[in-house]
Image (cartoon, rainbow, N blue to C red; front, side, top):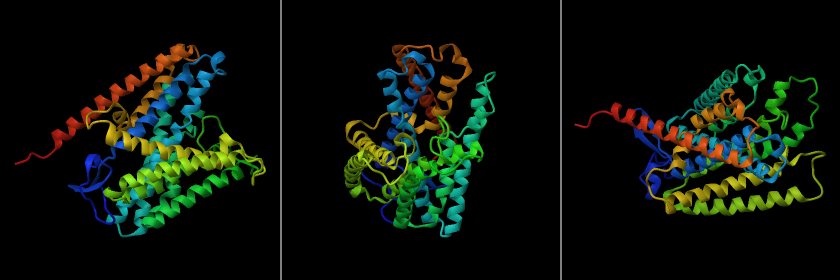
Length: 378
């Protein structure tokens, strides 16, 4: 865990396997924060149950409380993933600052990372289209999914790599606030005549299941600020940082709820669930409280052994990719929109167990491969 401007330093307790930076054979390598793996694993579980119920539940049950609750809870998966993508971006920019003196080169490296995510996004869209044959359509290839939003958002925020330390934190916070504040404005602009795909990339609520730049990239920006602060926090102040995260998260939820309920608004028209800045503030507050809770859980409540939640968190991209092809693909067509709520719950458990097994096997294979390729100790 880094302390101020030092490259790395051993720290207490579970931080020996954290997202710190340490020297290696190829310059620097990244270590992991267990609580962030657990937090990402929680987002995976929320996502799986949301998608499984959405795909399999009968249409006549979708107005009832249980189904609505699954989708309400599932609405937190995307903010968690986007915020943690921003945190990872903040970690990488902090590391780049230490080893790359040129700000413009740091910016180009960050842009390349965004391009890599976009490549994954379009590859995912292609495989999703392939597994939907013979019911696949061209729209499946151009759908603005969360990975597309993530890649575009990271490209837009890559300029943050030009700044250093606290200046980058301020940039990220200001960017997040600006994106959230402009979201209702973007909704109310005259978009008629503009390409539908452009609207899906920019306009909140332009398409069902689409992740537009506004307001979703605000989560990435706030995550970048959080990631920079977490990365720069000294080990002896880390618990204080988590205490402040819990307190600030609670305050943001309260403030967002208050402003969402006042009878007047600065916007002529705003939809709470599509473009409200108050909803962004509330969800970021929830994410910060989850982060502090995940830290408390992994640091003091569980041992250092294997964790199924962390295993899925470490393998979240593969889990996302595979489970979507399972629950929305043509192979399960007889089950789509055909199950009751208890049957949907059973399907959720089965899919989750499959993803846990896949993650465990994949991580074990990677560990064995790394052990075989490691140089022999004389």
